[in-house]
Length: 244
Length: 278
Image (cartoon, rainbow over all chains, first blue to last red; front, side):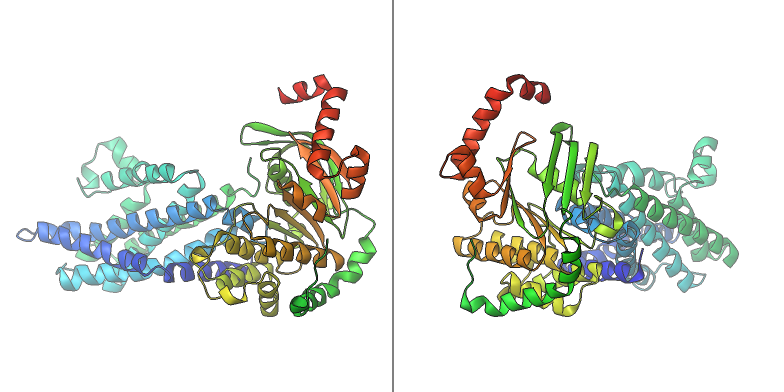
């Protein structure tokens, strides 16, 4: 691995996206619009203040997962990945370059989503809004890292789209949005403790209601970070220079 | 078959000068072949494609890999570049096992379908590949000139014609002046003038010490090569110069020579082919 090649890869991915303004607009606007819709649905109830933080975790996570997995799959399908792997580019350079590029987009997207939820939809945040943003960014980067990993196991666009319900939906169902995690059956509760999105939602809810101290949120951030590192490392390992 | 033209003189000079730096090292190793393949067996997907193939690509020549679609040209080239899973056999490239990390900057590979980023301009594509190869900024201008893309440098690759896109792909492989170029059907879909120019470029590169392995399924391109490897159903039928091939088979064009070789191969070894196929 080599920092210059990693940065060149990240710069190249960002230049590609810059040539596609519609994607940028969709990336930045869609999660905010969805959060707005949820706020509207619950406009005459206190529900949005409890599910709002979870929505900040959910929509950027899903969008980044999809965008990343499809972009890298496209690279595989058009032969550019094969070309790069026949050149002196480290597998880690490739994966980390993508993570950095989409990570930067995730920062912008999360900032837009948090800003919209708080200032337009009136989500009450008792804790630090910066901590909220930090968790939201980590969560969106997690979506990117899992998307990179998923695309390593998919050969077609159809397969990669199937990974969305397979890898993402269980995390949503068990993340405490539908039923608080402490009310889940014991086995599911234990399982949900291992899912990274559960910790992202816990952390966002804790910051929003200021119900836990910074150490608790920091611990959750560490768990998400470990998942990101794990997915990036596993994604690099599973990338094959030689294919049948 | 070499078509120097006065208008291309500046290009000719720039290609030569860039390669000059390597000429000394190339001369030292000139005796050793660029590629040696021994008993190579490989599948493409689940299909066995190469059944114990052996061949040699000498240095500093344009070697044509000629054969019909599906005969294993791409699988062989992928094996040489080191991106193909092989079942058995030995592939030695520039004195090292194919796929060795140190070879990745010394071997340029152009896939059959242009592998470029459609949503980047020609120059942005080359800037990225140059960054990966650690090639200089001047080198980008050199390969843009060599592939006649100066007028399109600011255009998105996706907006180019098929022939232009494949030249961007080729330009990427020329970056950093690799010692071996493996080009999979680089002239498909090009107009005749451009085709002649590209073959002239290949010969200029060979003259400056680069080894080239160029595949084609078009028989009339065979006469432009220094040496030919005729391939069919995963086997090499002939390894000769174009003239040597014609005189050995008593024919006047490569297509006829190819047919003569196939029928001779069948009559000499009727059972062998069947066994290898199953």
